[in-house]
Amino acid sequence: MAIRLDGKALAAQCRAEIAERVASLKAKGVTPGLAVVLVGDNPASQIYVRNKEKACAEAGIQSFPVLLPATATQEEVLAAVENLNRDERVHGILVQLPLPKGLDERAVLAAIRPEKDADGFHPYHAGKLMVGEETVVPCTPRGILMMLKTAGIPLRGKEAVVVGRSAIVGRPMAALLLREDCTVTVCHSRTADLAFHTKRADILVVACGQPQLITGDMVKPGAAVVDVGIHRVDGHVVGDVDAASVEPVAGWLSPVPGGVGPMTIAMLLQNTVEAAEHALS
Image 1 (cartoon, rainbow, N blue to C red):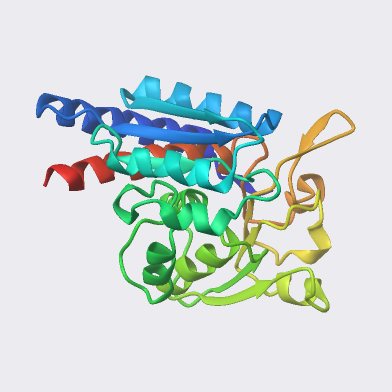
Image 2 (cartoon, rainbow, N blue to C red):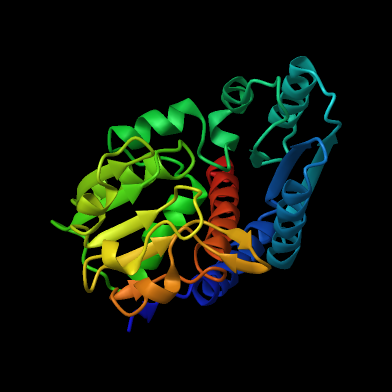
């Protein structure tokens, strides 16, 4: 039976450490600030933003919510980002995705000053990560790597398979695992014979957005399986992994909910505090 990769407990530990770092910054006259830009009234996005504001308050980080209507133009969104770039109280900027149709997400993300990019999505950081340099790392992959390392799961020389190639999770996760000396395969919707690849994985990270796609017969016995998905199916919350069939096979498994999600928010706070520390140095 798989060992649980408890992101909720680890995130609580991280947030306690972050609160100490915030207190140290405040003693030096600096209060870390995180700005969240929300365009439109997507209910899921509104929940995410509220959760981030609550987490900031608990850690002592100041929140600067910027709410724009779904009818906001590209120019209005870019102007809001530029205002935050200029605001010395703001150390981290996050644009809640997805943006409404008609807005250019890449242009908006690229407009954030790299030193204030709390999500690590700016092309500057993506490029540095891709060539193996230290940089701001996207929150979900950073949290996953911390979960794996904290659990003592061997990485060097291991076969890692990432299912999903998004710029938010899949691609940066693959780059991080490469940096840890894993042999990495990235699978996606056009991959032929997905199970052939997943059954070879010592570390399997699933971020494909399809409920319960990965089943127990697709997993190598003893593998570390990280489930990034979250869906509501027939009134139940499930991930991209069919936990019931995978748990008896895997060596480690992150639960949904309570696995990756709490770590993503913890890493967002950490990226913000690190930005404030760099601004002070």
